Image (cartoon, rainbow, N blue to C red):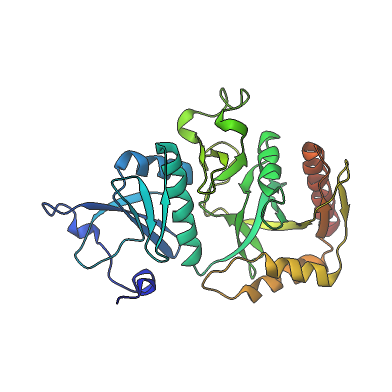
Length: 312
């Protein structure tokens, strides 16, 4: 039996040269940096919506006999991820679009050589302010708040870092924030065009609001920012936000645990952490309840002050 992982890293793929062969169903390909994802059975309207929300171009290719795509959309509306054999039912077109974006990003993550950390980031005075933490820690809420406060946002969940250049840049995954009941908030309606937002359910059944990466104050893919500060998020029950300096052990344990599994070594990020610790730009933050705007301001002010000290 063919190992589907070989089809990701080195197997033959549909080629744009095969476009136009009669009677052959079409596939679509999204390419990002050193990797790509192939989708079959998805209509072009959904592909165009994915392209806009992820800020990724696509090409139409033709299916070749014996070649497996990465993701298949069945006539029943199920999504099938070939690598793992998983199947995900989607009740609505919006849910299907959410699933396509999620699975495509998972595939790009698993097949890239880039270093990616489980973090959000926004930009202050030309430098990236990263906030790193596990699932359900509030990274998306912080990123969404920063965006509403007009800070340029790099991402809310997966951030590309170059440990040697000490830079951060965006991954194609658009930011998502929790959204009760699947109803668009009145403050979003006039500011975000319908084609640049999506309200749907994740494969877990939870509603999310997705904001397209092409919106104003969403940094473009490929634009790199020097990393100015790293915040390690921790849980707490205080009403007000607290920022402190973590221990060396806690900082190292957190950054290694929150470095995503890609085709490169997790240990590469230690160089970035060491540089930031040397400049005293690694912090621990506990965001207070209902204190998001103040937390973002505190993070931005501290990052700005650190920058002024380092350049003085």
